[in-house]
Image 1 (cartoon, rainbow, N blue to C red):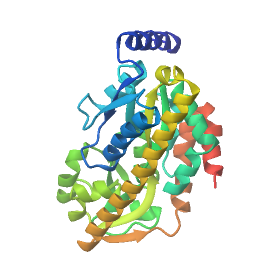
Image 2 (image 1 turned 180 degrees about the vertical axis):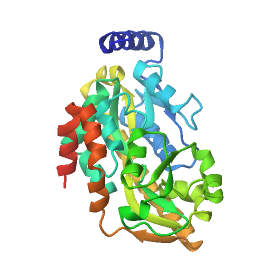
Image 3 (image 1 turned 90 degrees about the vertical axis):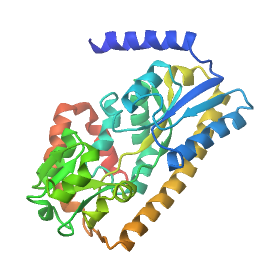
Amino acid sequence: MNHMLKASVLGGLASLSLAFGASAADWRGWNIHVEGYPNTVAMDKFAELLTEKTDGEISLQMFHGGTLGSQPDAIEQVRLGGLQIGNFNLGPIGPIAAEANVVSLPFIFKDVPHMFRVLDGEAGEMIAKGMAAEGLVPLAWYDAGARSFYNGAKPINTPEDVQGMKVRVMNNDLYSGMIAQLGGNPSPMAFAEVYQALKTGVVDGAENNWPSYESTGHFEVAGYYSLSQHLIIPECVCINADVYNGLSDDMKAAVKEAAAESAELQRQLWAEREAASREKVEAAGVVVNEIADKAPFQEAMAPVYEDYLAKNPDLRPLVELIQATE
């Protein structure tokens, strides 16, 4: 199906869904996270604030824990209008909206504060515009932390420390290319298999954020955590584009204000959760090292970026804008 025909079909389905589905005053929202997780608490707060700031004209019923389907399915449902709201990671949105895929480039962000500065500026507007063109309007950005390397043998301080190392990565060519350019051997595998693979030596290391490293017990079998922060992929609170565009200016402002306040809460809760996870693993004896100079890692990514931009030349200005943001 060509792009124009697909867009036409999606638009027609969205109109039908809006005509026969939930009204603007009765929204449903999707979230993959469990009760008590920072995003879940924040999305419940978003629902509460929506009702408050719209004087009861809009209500949002949240469905947590992925109960309404997988993340890819839910993304499509929000695009089509079957669901009005979703809390999504930008990773799986990347294949749908090319502008969103740039956040999956390794070392594109210097750190989490840099990521938020980018998203709050012109580059964030370009990403939001690309997503909106595919039916998803981002209302606010949530923190999903930074992914760093961990292994059982030694700290990682330079690209040379990765040479020859078998490293588990998510199944994405960008991530495999990152490990290969550092001289390692990328080993894509399901997340559920990583603990045993680390324990038995099928892989030497892996990479993830603090809460994932701690909650899965990976720290028990990979006691060196090196703060590379090579992937910083945010999450969004997204709304169906037709639903959003159908709101009055006052209602749009109220919805965005509610989302922004929920993001403040989520970021605070995420920081607390990260700190608690780090404290737990350090108490268990994990060796944590800051990487003093990330520049050699970033320089090693040049072939990954050039390959990516050769396939996506229209995105070069966006990539360069992100890199130029202080």
